[in-house]
Image (cartoon, rainbow, N blue to C red; front, side):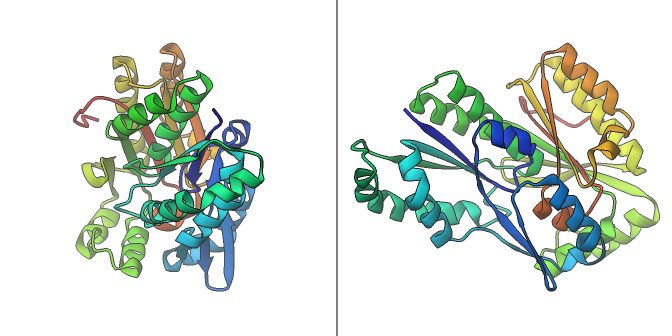
Length: 314
């Protein structure tokens, strides 16, 4: 059976990984004033857009995910012919309409695919599963990597569906941002009051950086640490301990809102990479998506891994 895997461009995976494993992308378009960029996970294009637009006016950006009709057209024009079963893995539905758009589109796709497949010479049925990864950015990528691993291992569709649905609730995402003022401005633009003025002002004045934890569709601060480098190092040290204790899948995903050379120079990065290597954990790192950067600001660090429930003790 030909199994397809679809992700949206907020899923922070390296472009090389996406191309090598034939992942299909639902691009998210970012518009800042007159500048428009569709995010196709092209790292050079993302960094150029960051330099030219995001740094100055990113908080005012509009993000335009694929709508119902665009998703329907993508499937009916290509995917119902190229594959027999597709897993569509989306960013958490609590932060984006992509999941609901894909779910709504799936009803039309499953009603309309038959004559298209038959014209292409396929008499077998087509099936589609839309799955909420319940997380963001690098953490969203963990479920996609497991889908790739299972497909390449020859797992059945039923086993993949069961495993991926179970795994989504076990993925933990963490993030440290550089600029709370930016996050507050972005939140105000979107009508989101999750970052208050007092918290942003005090945090920036005192150089306090929150460590944010994403799990099962919810995001909340789990620590407040003085200094960005210090916060990142403590997050990396915590991740090392979780890796050493044993993860549920053999991957840790990371993303950074800027050039990866800056990520690799952060304190604690080299030690985390060494711990991953020592325990057989693949470390996948990528430039953060445009969607991620306009929402959390340049220079943010995110990481994700699948693990049992735990408490951040960094």
